[in-house]
Image 1 (tube, rainbow, N blue to C red):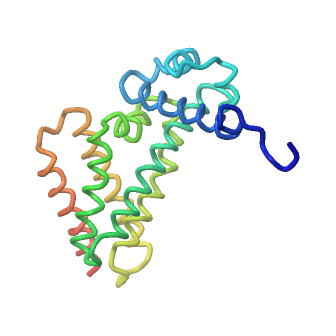
Image 2 (image 1 turned 60 degrees about the horizontal axis):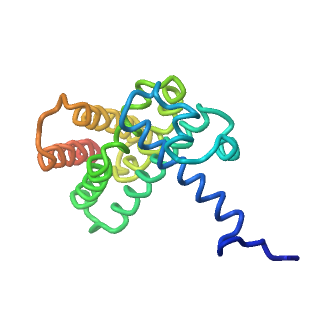
Length: 202
């Protein structure tokens, strides 16, 4: 079949491989987002995905690479949700802040497994502890872009980093059950924090 990828049951080899990878990533969210990270193993992933180890190693070198891929998948989802929220919101600081916070809270609370993967797993799993901190600048950059540019760029960067850290700790407390407030109150408080940070640069 020159120039054409062979198909089976209407799908190509690349399609089937991508579907298997997606299956493993979804299982990874379930495993990492509902229990102790120590329970995440190659065997557990294969059992829940109903796929053999051959297919696991087709996609991941080992257990740690699998966990990092699961984490990155959720990070990409969160980043995309924030970008889309800010882009589609009315172009005012208040509306953008409300849209971004609402989008993030919706993501991590409508499916708490994703929230735990994103925020709690890096605190518990050695494979993610350093890797997770390397992803924080991505979110800080989104915040920095929303801050007023009337001050020194380094001040904007520091404010954005501090804000992301503070918001992350609020969300961690909420997911862990140590922060007992309604979703609406959490969103409103986070929006005030974002706007307050922006006011520092007005």
